[in-house]
Amino acid sequence: MSNTTQQAVGGQFVLESMHYARDKTWEVVEQVAARIQPGMLESEAVSECKRVLQELEMERIWHPILIRFGENTLRTFKQRSEEDPRLKEDDIFFVDLGVVWKGHEGDAGATFVVGADAEMKACAEAAKTVFDEVEHHWRTTGSGGKALYDYAAERASALGWRLNLDIKGHRVSDFPHAIFKAGNLGNFEPHPEAGLWILEIQLAHPTRPFGSFYEDLLA
Image (cartoon, rainbow, N blue to C red; front, top):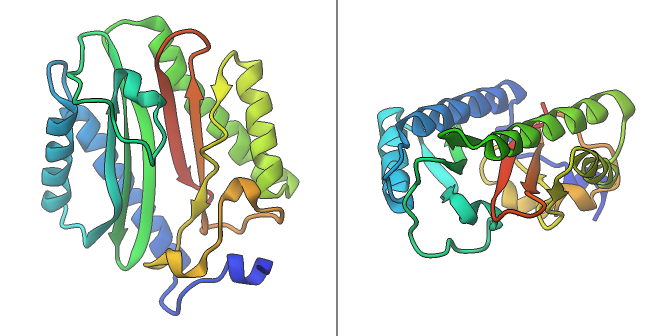
């Protein structure tokens, strides 16, 4: 597949609308995270997320709502959660949303911590740190997608975490991006264009059963 095909867009694509979709999706992520409290079931958090999406008048979701508590933060997008855990007083969770606004695909995800577990807080912060470092590398070096994930693995290891390389980012566009069959960002050799790719970072604690997640648009 050619670079041109892998970075193709639909006839309605507008970069500013991609930014709008990103910002609106982040608004939902933050509102949902603020409503998630210890004692809540993972399934209850998903229901709360649906209410927020309705309140903000989203057009549609383009990938299933993904909210993971505790040990489920180690699971990838395609893996189902183990049972329906209840959020503990000291716990970690992430929110991952793909939502269409103005005909464009927003995709955002971040990790949050309740309570005082220092290693959970460090893990959540590390996902954002690695994301920021890789995003800066993308912006300043002209690196391709594969090189970006090689760099991400190096940075995660240097900070004491394991990068899940089964999660390698993906395309977005005016809805639906899937018609372009672009594959994963981590397998894409050329330099990714702005506004078309989601950089995903999923980390695992080296010894304890939890991880963290952060994703955003390379804008």
